[in-house]
Length: 602
Image (cartoon, rainbow, N blue to C red; front, side, top):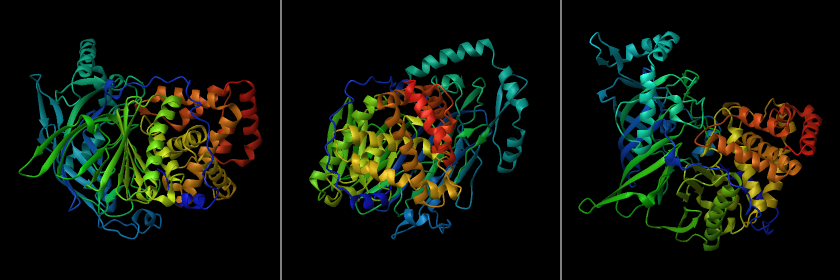
């Protein structure tokens, strides 16, 4: 996500007029990125929703299929961060809320689990967590299974009874015959639609062949325990809040980010139920397949994380509505924007991907053209540098909001101000679009913990933005880089406050410290490596990072390990100086870089 404040400062400074090198990445080797539909997903979301743009509501049903050994399932209800009873008094909320603020709420109307009525409850002061009891499978003397639905009172007791002894028992039941069946099942899954409802078992290794130690809901990290396919069906009603955030609306559009009930990540035997912090991007999710049927009144347009060009569209003349059936394979979230007929689109093709920029009548034509060029050329550049973009569509959509830009798989929300002439054609909107596009690799294709390690995806995306603006055909690199350098110099003051780059979101006192450390200091760390060791060596490492972790998760520790391996020695002094803000280690960090440069390892 990009922020607006620094853009106004930079706009008052040097003009962004330098023409930079034209496509020096042309002959770079590509990493092998796999098409998303070729990789099995642990979770599948199937939904049927009706959107009312006039009343700013969404209602519908969502079926979530996932593999689990647990007795319950936990879901985030992110829209309830803006519940009428929510305490939004923290000053950091004000940047999200803005001046025109109305609360919103998601109500859960009914829940079924494995085809049966399920016990459920919403937890937290704003009902932001949905807890669903899963039917318990009991073995009878006759070898048949009986389903028992847990009550709310029984649920907590069953959680405590899920012990190591039960896990061991599950492992002992995995025989050679079952392993052979699992192998056959994996082959069948690759040939059928991810929404198939048969009740199968697969091992965690089959869930994601790219990662042997996958952190997934309802599985153990050993990768050996079998998991049962579960299904939770949720009926909900959503009233959108009005604010400057990711889930809101104005007179011409509704933008829905983090709007669906989201299965929480199960990590190290615990559910990740992190709150919606008023800082950064407080979300953590895993790859899933999506199939959504979206009902809209006639006259509205739709841009989504899925493939609209392949959508099945059914128009109902008497009702004056259209239904869009949209698929998205292996993405971390499903976002969409509903637009009225004032919107237009500019379209182009880059390496088999359709790029669409959605703008409105009255926007500055030259600015629109530059933003679209940035979207297309950054897809091309990042694909050459870090691995080909594997999805068939990418949308850049004008919305409201304070955030500058907000990334989601296959779609980016761009603050409407950047489509006006005062921000273009060489304005900071180009940096915003490039940054959100870089997130399609760093967050989208390679996931990370945006709550506890926000620096991982944000520093890489900001470095990639600098590299694109420096190397590519769209001008702006000089001023953007100068601004980031200036903000990174504030590190001495932050170190005295006990702050550093490698902090969870709730440790940052305000948006300014978060931006200066995570974006500026983190991004400049990568830029320093480029300056000292060369772009080609750094980008080779990042290509390998993408190739090794595509469609899965990566950690900050794994990035540090890659740095150490590339340099041929432990990168701890370098990381301590740049990320932990141990400023006394500057000389050690410089010596580490010098030895790495001389050894030509990075």
